Length: 154
Image (cartoon, rainbow, N blue to C red; front, top):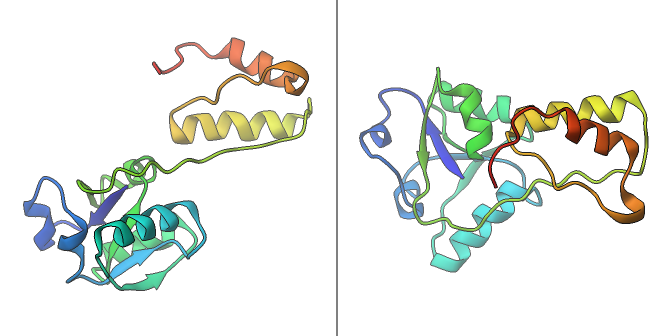
């Protein structure tokens, strides 16, 4: 998880931030119940920190726009923030070590739409999912894994 801020924001002078550093800033985050928000809420509870999320949006682009306009410090995953590094500075949250997990689950299928979705997610998030095994394995997932040129190290 990272906090993203526009150039010139007071937090950009730091190499990273902590939850305590965020308490004095308006925050923009995904809505309650989403993976990132759950990680953020659990980390705050574990440390006894009570920041106020002043703005919520369910799309990263909306959170980014709020941060770009200086309305809030946005909280994103590191993989989301890389797409906006030309406009925002991403600051790692040094005291949040709870991993956020994005999982895709699908029924066995050989349809082109599923293949396109899996390929898009692998490109967008930079990691590949483990290859399904046993009866859940599909010809589509096996084929897409064979085509991968340089899978990321695990």
